[in-house]
Structures are given as structure tokens and as C-alpha cells.
Image (cartoon, rainbow, N blue to C red):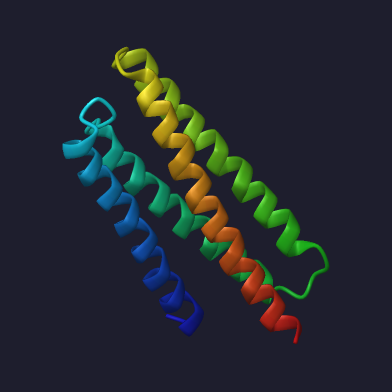
Length: 129
């Protein structure tokens, strides 16, 4: 396991812990916002982010021009569709508290996407220097 990947796992675990802490706190402070599906959403976000990171990290090592951009864009689109399928399954099966669910999925998706881009840009910049 590379040093970059270990660092990514450590930082991502902290991000996931913060999101999980938000879920636990919301369970007591904002009970109307809390849904058990929030735990699944955080886990899904973290696992998908790990997958995208591994693909993007491997493409950074590739010498072909544009390989990183192509692979990162394809992985990001796949991530978006995976979350869309998750949303559709929830909305059509549970049919209650959809707004709370959608808000948290949007927050979760945004947080993990920003984290992923930050780490990958930092790696890309260090590779070019």
C-alpha cells in the first residue's frame, strides 16, 4: 500500500467520522432530520470515494496524456449514477422523509467529492513538481 493511499485513508476516515458524528448528533438534536439510511449513505460515499481515488491514482502514474482526466471523469460520472440509483431505490421503496434523505445525500456527495478533488489535485501538483 502506497504512502499516498495510507494518507488518503486516514484523512478520509476523519471526514467519514465527522459525517457520522453529524448523523449521531442530529439523531438527538434534530430528530426530524435523522434517518437510519444516513449511516448507509456515509458508508456508500466513503467506499465509492475510495474506488474513484484508486482509479485516479493509478491514472496519475500513467504516462499517456489525458489519461488522468479521462479516467477521473468516467469515475465521477459512474459515482454520480451510483448515487442516483441509490436515491431512486430509496425514494420508491421508503416513500417517507424523502426531503431529509435527499438533503443528506447531497451534503454527503458534496463533502466526499470536494475531499476527493482536493487530495487528487494535491497529488497531481506534487507529481509535477
